[in-house]
Length: 94
Image 1 (cartoon, rainbow, N blue to C red):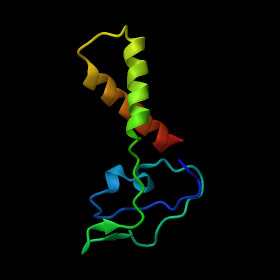
Image 2 (cartoon, one colour):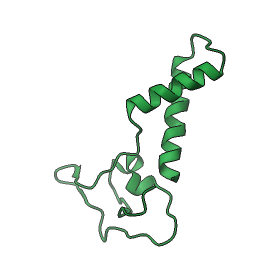
Image 3 (cartoon, rainbow, N blue to C red):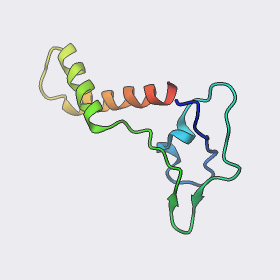
Image 4 (cartoon, rainbow, N blue to C red):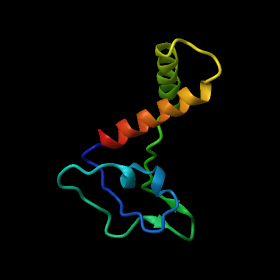
């Protein structure tokens, strides 16, 4: 989790569970937005920062997990979801 970003309390923002400004773990002193930046009228948050890893990173880790498990076929989704979860947790906690 970068130390130089402003966190968000999110309020009623529907994007909060995928935004690092809300999901990230706070270490030490942190700044927060005074009011959540989500605009209910437009449905847009100009400060949204996705905590979802990029496709290429997920694919690489899923392949590594598949290889470590003996390269068994039929569990593609299992490895993909496991890799995605690992990367999300790393990003939220770093």
